Image (tube, rainbow, N blue to C red; front, side, top):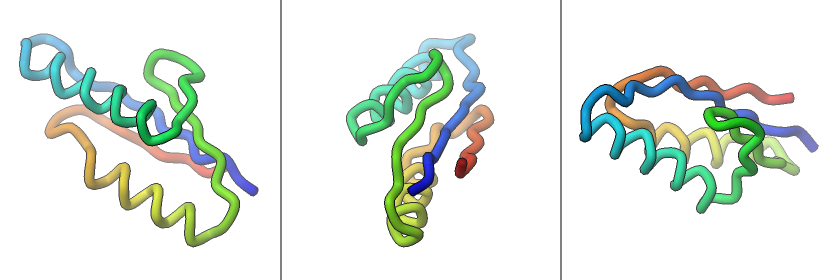
Length: 73
């Protein structure tokens, strides 16, 4: 088993940017991620196939701006 950790730095200077950042954080929580810090979320992955599935899901839900990194531990 490994943990998938997703860390993000998202711009929040304008209303659309705030909406995108909030939407991404809410999506992470709804998808089963646990909030470790405001911009750091983690999820347990049992198999390699699950890891790939969750990385693909994160990629599909990325906001248009900012930086998002995923790390397997």
